[in-house]
Length: 148
Image (cartoon, rainbow, N blue to C red; front, side, top):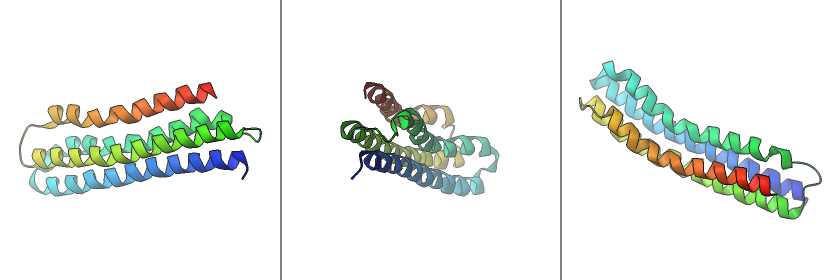
């Protein structure tokens, strides 16, 4: 197998997993938002923000591609391709799981807001905690990308 193929497979996995996480996550929060709007339609802005938060993981996967794209050349070595594959897989898994878990927390917040509780600000802080790990993953992509 050509080394460049291994690198591109890693990039493809990263983009796929991060995108799937965002798709699944936004669907979870959007479903909760639709249910909450039936009870409390005046809080649509809060629902919108909480529904959009899991979409950032898909953007992190795309950013990971841009950080690694300079290494996607025919002369990439097997070592470099393995590093690209590994770090891409790491970021993809982080983004997938983070988006889903973030969405589950967001859905709980949306349900609470829909029931009339004033939870937006405090919930937003807690929900964003799951964002830290894909950001650390992006930092790892940047550092490893610069090291190879």
